[in-house]
Length: 549
Image (tube, rainbow, N blue to C red; front, side):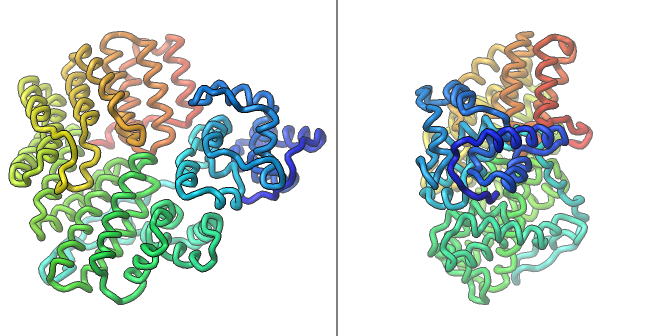
């Protein structure tokens, strides 16, 4: 959003007119961001002030609420300091990156939208990342809804990427490869975003071209984290006929890791397009390398990207497409005898089958993963395999088999990621392990054990693993319902709803509504009725559960 800047000293006439217009626009269904854009035409002021006017709040009211919400509990914001922030850069002082997230939550906005382009560009890369991460636009019930993904791809024949590597061809034009070609509107949106985030005109073209390859605006956060020299090297490999070298492939691996972490915090939708386009580029490069260690490394990147694409598609409920990408990754990993990625993908296939309640199919993949894990030499992979096994057995009601898998999981878990463990196993830690214990116990209706384990799992789960925290809370809510502790179960569900509104994982939402259905006997209680109203406010509604099958 681009707005003009003047001092934030209040003008009563402008303020009253702005508040009246904001109220009218809100009643017509405008989002807060859209209202601010309209107000900016008539009131040349900072975004921070315009958001306050849009919400029809006085500075004193904002300060009081801020000091209640301040996570540091310092209650240090004063009215004059808020005015200083609203005046910047024509006076006052630059808004603190620690203040912006709290204000963004109050205004149901992204922190990035609360400052001008010039102010944003003045922050360090680390502070820009903090600003980017604070996005509460999902709390706005009138926010525009994202466009649905295109139809699922149809089956397709195989293609040959190299002399010896045979993989299925990309989906037909009515499938996911619609996402591989940027539209004119997407290119224009990306151009605006690049010029806002990169002040150096000499670097804007490289950033624009790379971000376009990595999914447009959704890929921009990933590309921006690369150093300028890494961007140049990646651009040379992507846009020229030169073959990628070892350094470029290392950058590929780093970018894949960045995509995984972005998925952890924001969900699959913001990163899916980037991963699909990135994977397509790597697939084309495979034809330019000869049989060598370099080709093996590039195939490994392709296999991991295929696994990641499958995982993202699984998490948005596109199960046939996810299965296809998982199997393409499996084929690539088998070609280069990458035992650890083979094991990991079998675990992912089992994971998806359990979620869809296809237990025999899931256990088939579990048995395959156990065999490969034994050859991998990785205690962490063996641990993850037993976690998936415990989940499958407990979903099927097999208490003895579940206990055995949990015991093996506990004995196998190493203290840390080994030097030769794949980096994509970063999430398999103590919190993740205890979380699987809680989930297994709740599926076996052992609610007391589940509550104890879920409390520990929540304490051990890193805050940036947002989806995993959602799952830990879901297990806790299920256990509380089993204990008939309904008010506390609803309180936990409210926290899950906040996660489901801001994170695009379909699975979190589906399981949350599973818990809500279990509360139907208490549907008329004040707690449950208030929770239902909150779901409506957040724009959350259940999917047809038959789509899991």
